[in-house]
Image (tube, rainbow, N blue to C red; front, side):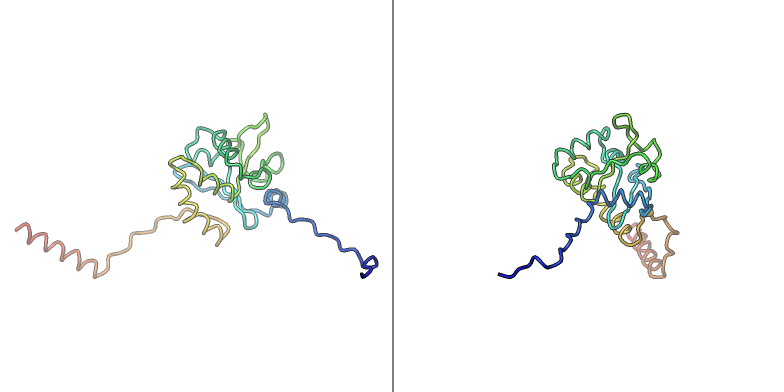
Length: 187
């Protein structure tokens, strides 16, 4: 058997930070993006850090139709797959102020103003398990509009309606033919 004692020790690399740790580090370093977009008139703060996006639990609860954030937090606990500190992060103090969320957006937890953020993974677990009628439309809004825009540009903006397209000659001809048939039918 070979003697390996004279080989240099190889330092083990530390494990990568959890998603929650990476989020807090991004907030502290200012390396995150933040946008607010409405879902059915309800403002939704979206925080993008690296490849992950996060949403405020209180706002998500309102958008889905829960009476308050506690109802959604009960569901999150019942799911059992959302990991606190990884998929669910409580942001407080200077970190919370750096997010730019005003106090009106933050629930009080134990007398301290905090913002609780839920990761994309956590949001998906919630939407799969929620029985609230708004869960399916919210999931569709995320999947069709928000997530693709975030992946492409790092932000989501509500599309603004442009001017109506002008009818082409073909459209005009079809409309005239339809009108002529209606007149012939009525005669």
